[in-house]
Length: 343
Image (cartoon, rainbow, N blue to C red):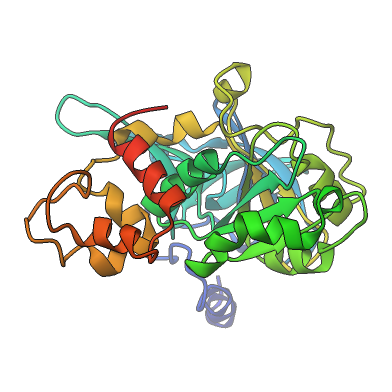
């Protein structure tokens, strides 16, 4: 290679986070074999569907490549999940629609469950790099089950995943009636969207909330999750039930997560994930549970006794806040049920 060609080659990778030319273990062989950057949108056994960015492909076009993990990377794997849906990865293209995953970028966040191991718990990553959770409930039909909503919010808080509540079917009750039910969540700081997939109400606000984020969509059966996403993305044609119910204990919980690309923004994805029972609710330490009820945070260090469970102890600041109307009785009841392991 001539010196001027060498400098051109080096300049191509100067601002590139991929391994440099002098990394003999993993450098690209030739500039014509540049790595493509993309996101894992589906996992199927040992194969992964990776949606690559046009800018990183030699032909300047977006591809969905069926990829395997390079052997060297497999040798480096730990007990935890090596590649998960939502991971940003570097792929060595093979032909038009295949590739090898050469590198996985560091994850910004995870939605995961813990499995016990011999020396330490092993993390099973359900979804990598989620930005937020959109939990959908109906204003009516089915009637809103707020303790179920509280369970999901605890999961989101435990995973440090910002949650947005979407109240659908407001055409059945009117927005004012829906706000009467869900208004307490707004008062404690959760964003709440009021929508109607049938009347296309609130869809602009929903679309704005989804733009350029990976959003986990969850909610009980029959609330209209798929209908809402179909209104936002009419050509997606999700069937009823395609987005799983987060209390589902049946066949759907064995399926892996999957990303659906939204046709707005530069990187907007909706994530379909396994049921809430797969997300580790029963692995939450009782001592940490109060921290996942955000309205309790201001009172947790004001109790008389260290280690207060906020259940029965005297001079408990949380119980006093409930008595004074500063914490909603319904939310406190949800806390006690989870603390005591009640369904």
